[in-house]
Length: 83
Image 1 (cartoon, rainbow, N blue to C red):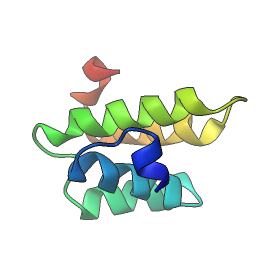
Image 2 (cartoon, helix red, strand yellow):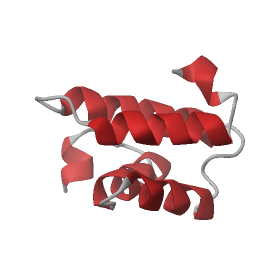
Image 3 (cartoon, rainbow, N blue to C red):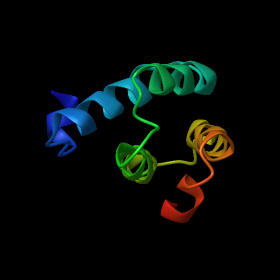
Image 4 (cartoon, helix red, strand yellow):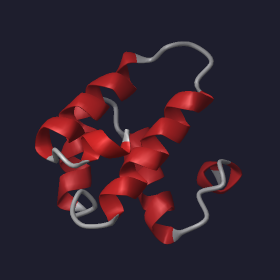
Protein backbone atom coordinates (compact mmCIF):
# COMPACT_ATOMS: atom_id res chain seq x y z
CA UNK A 1 0.00 0.00 0.00
CA UNK A 2 2.78 2.40 0.93
CA UNK A 3 4.55 1.72 -2.37
CA UNK A 4 1.39 2.56 -4.29
CA UNK A 5 0.90 5.73 -2.23
CA UNK A 6 4.46 6.80 -3.13
CA UNK A 7 3.63 6.30 -6.85
CA UNK A 8 5.82 3.25 -7.35
CA UNK A 9 3.91 2.28 -10.47
CA UNK A 10 5.97 -0.61 -11.87
CA UNK A 11 6.82 -3.98 -10.38
CA UNK A 12 10.53 -3.12 -10.46
CA UNK A 13 10.05 0.17 -8.60
CA UNK A 14 7.76 -1.47 -6.02
CA UNK A 15 10.30 -4.22 -5.48
CA UNK A 16 13.16 -1.73 -5.02
CA UNK A 17 11.02 0.42 -2.72
CA UNK A 18 10.12 -2.57 -0.53
CA UNK A 19 13.78 -3.63 -0.30
CA UNK A 20 14.98 -0.14 0.64
CA UNK A 21 12.22 0.64 3.12
CA UNK A 22 12.03 -2.87 4.56
CA UNK A 23 15.68 -3.09 5.54
CA UNK A 24 16.94 -2.00 8.93
CA UNK A 25 20.54 -1.34 8.00
CA UNK A 26 22.19 -0.17 4.82
CA UNK A 27 24.27 -3.34 4.35
CA UNK A 28 21.14 -5.50 4.48
CA UNK A 29 19.42 -3.34 1.86
CA UNK A 30 22.49 -3.42 -0.36
CA UNK A 31 22.78 -7.21 -0.17
CA UNK A 32 19.08 -7.62 -0.99
CA UNK A 33 19.45 -5.31 -4.00
CA UNK A 34 22.43 -7.32 -5.24
CA UNK A 35 20.58 -10.62 -4.74
CA UNK A 36 17.58 -9.25 -6.62
CA UNK A 37 19.92 -8.39 -9.54
CA UNK A 38 18.62 -4.84 -9.79
CA UNK A 39 22.08 -3.25 -9.75
CA UNK A 40 22.83 -4.48 -13.25
CA UNK A 41 21.79 -3.08 -16.60
CA UNK A 42 19.07 -0.47 -16.97
CA UNK A 43 17.48 -1.19 -13.60
CA UNK A 44 20.36 0.46 -11.73
CA UNK A 45 18.90 3.83 -12.71
CA UNK A 46 15.58 2.87 -11.17
CA UNK A 47 17.36 2.01 -7.92
CA UNK A 48 18.87 5.50 -7.81
CA UNK A 49 15.56 7.17 -8.69
CA UNK A 50 13.66 5.28 -6.00
CA UNK A 51 16.42 5.97 -3.46
CA UNK A 52 16.37 9.70 -4.19
CA UNK A 53 12.56 9.71 -4.02
CA UNK A 54 12.58 7.98 -0.63
CA UNK A 55 15.21 10.38 0.68
CA UNK A 56 13.20 13.36 -0.51
CA UNK A 57 10.10 12.17 1.33
CA UNK A 58 11.85 12.25 4.72
CA UNK A 59 11.17 15.26 6.91
CA UNK A 60 14.61 15.17 8.57
CA UNK A 61 18.00 14.03 7.35
CA UNK A 62 18.44 10.26 7.50
CA UNK A 63 22.03 9.02 7.06
CA UNK A 64 20.71 5.61 5.96
CA UNK A 65 20.16 6.88 2.42
CA UNK A 66 23.61 8.47 2.20
CA UNK A 67 25.30 5.27 3.35
CA UNK A 68 23.27 3.15 0.95
CA UNK A 69 24.02 5.56 -1.92
CA UNK A 70 27.72 5.45 -1.15
CA UNK A 71 27.67 1.64 -1.02
CA UNK A 72 25.82 1.41 -4.34
CA UNK A 73 28.23 3.83 -6.02
CA UNK A 74 31.26 1.89 -4.79
CA UNK A 75 29.75 -1.32 -6.18
CA UNK A 76 28.47 0.06 -9.47
CA UNK A 77 30.56 3.02 -10.61
CA UNK A 78 28.08 4.02 -13.36
CA UNK A 79 25.49 4.96 -10.73
CA UNK A 80 27.49 8.08 -9.86
CA UNK A 81 26.29 9.68 -13.09
CA UNK A 82 22.66 8.99 -12.32
CA UNK A 83 22.89 10.64 -8.91
